[in-house]
Amino acid sequence: MAAIGAWGELDDQQLLSSFVDVTRSRNDRELAFRELVARYRHRVFAVCFRVLDDHADAEDATQETFVKLARGADGFRGEAKLSTWLYRVAHNVCTDRIRYEARRPSTPVDDVAAVGTEPSVADTSEAHATATVVGAALARLDQRSRQLLLLVAVDGLSYAEAAEAADLPVGTVKSRVSRARVQLGELLADAPDDRQDPPHGAADVPRISRSEPARPGPRGPPEP
Image (cartoon, rainbow, N blue to C red):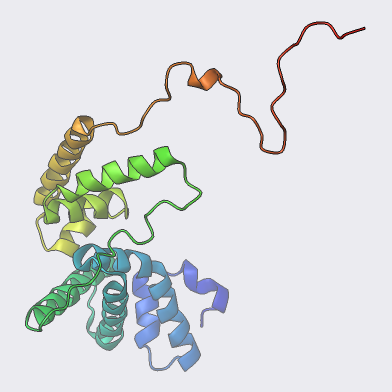
């Protein structure tokens, strides 16, 4: 029986086998499954978010993906990597949610795709301008290319994992991401620079503190 601290040393198949082993204690089985969730939750969420473009929906889809793993764990034969299987399940869960929502009357909601990526108040105006320009350039890519580029470049999925998540051939993913990188670079190169340089000589003008009154200029020698 594996010690609590040793679960992280097991590979995916060993963890899954521990989870489905009914001879183990309930606590051991739960620990094995929790390790799998901790290992893949971030990437599964990334896949769901790129497809659904909504944090709350992505959280729900992530939970549903791991529920499906728990229910179907004893049927997993290891013919593919567990990560690959999870990304495919996550993509299918998201696709089913989109189809379901498409059949329901929709109410417009605010776009929350950029939640968590907007610069904070403390960010400089230059950083804010850069984020705005990059976001606008990404928005001009077609949806599939944008999703694939973000999965690979931001979320760190390999081409094979992104291909499995999007249900596309690896070669297609590579070419789409490559074209998306080129297109994004061209869009950024053509984007106008809205940052305004200070007027000539303005950088040499000293600031006067509100708590410190301006000092008068020299008035000549004092009167005797």
